[in-house]
Image (cartoon, rainbow, N blue to C red; front, side, top):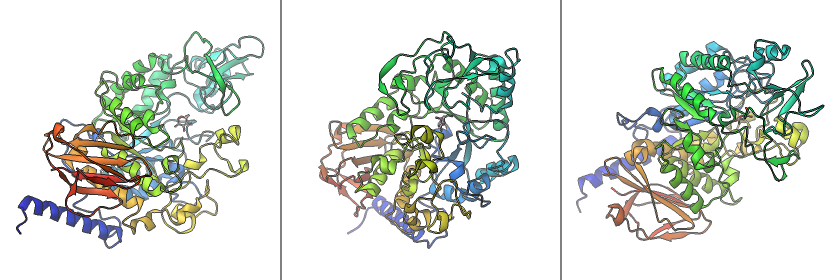
Length: 588
Ligand code: GLC
């Protein structure tokens, strides 16, 4: 029987990709040789900005790679792992703060915005990282902590020195309501009053986060100018943009109204409140437009990412502005879904896909502030399979995806066992109910050796979890069925398939309570890909009639499935998906 040429070509492409993947995973090809055909970059349409198709990888620098044996990760450590990131298929890294800091909030308390903390290296090391990353087509995105400085920043030291200091108004200073009482009931996100009395001048200063993180006063034009100069400093060094920390907290109501009290108490024992007068004030958007104007002056289309857990789609959409604010607002609504629920994900994906600003969605499931996805979605039995399911969800929609270091190997959350081991101050204040964020910040697991290849130190700043013996880059690179191998294949597919890279997102089988299914259709409509994600622990059989979507095929060609599916044609009229199974098939 003669095989039609197109089919033969497809078969060969598939067979070559499979062979390369096998050779690669079995270490027959050297680690830093990218798998050529699966990793081939598809030309981006002229009009598409780069960040629409990028894959971002968040690096918590203390925990990625230690290059000098002090037990803490550093810049040269990151540089030494760029080949790994390139081969994984990463286009940009966002690095959490590395600026000089007393490290009360592990770098989110900055005492100098235009330098590198010696713990992480030098500015020269940073420049070297940028140039080495560039050689590998990887862009570097900095964390920009705009809401607050450290109380050790010279600006704050000067501000607190007297009521008449020229920098007094750079921060939020107010008299107490009456003797011994703060100006109002506002609470810090990290527990207790958001006001601290400074005895030197007998006034309170405001801090949304720790006492050691006083809020800048963004109503002061000098503050804005100084902070915009910080952006220019890093843009001049070649960074590709910023992830703006805590962006919705930049302004507070100047009338200092009390926040509404809600029922119950938080894990710090304070009454719950609605942060009505300190979150998402309209003035935030004026600042975002100014920030966007600054990055837009630079070549290479630098990007603004916002960190803000907007309470609803309206606020999230507002972050895009009129295409003149944030290009990529982090979608916390999706990241905060804590259970596998096809209807819930379908609703949220639909909602953001149709956002009235036509903004590009930006998804993630793990970061340095919340428990890792391996255990958050895992059911304790199928966690590895569920890790692949979540990878497929992250990497097959039209959203720009953000990975958190280690999720690609199934790193788990490993919280401290004893209060005395806690590093994160929230864990110290909130123990035992709130154990802090150490669990999701443990060192990257590179190999099965001591300290998982992260460091040669006797003690690492957080312990290396015991699961590292099994879950690490080297071991998983040798296993074609590992979580890492699945990520690599999904990332390669996203590049090589135009429908996955830049196609539209079309939800199908919309009433299915257990399985999330959708199509990706390439811009010209010639290629379509079917994605089926079983979000339950039971096998499901599905019958798809895609004629309403202009697709007459009854079979699809498996591109990637977990568990693995063999064959050249899989019926979509009778498609069986295993518990928490993934099926991604071509319909062209
Ligand atoms: C952001 C950071 C978090 C930090 C906080 C205060 O939420 O992600 O790690 O503690 O801001 O800067």
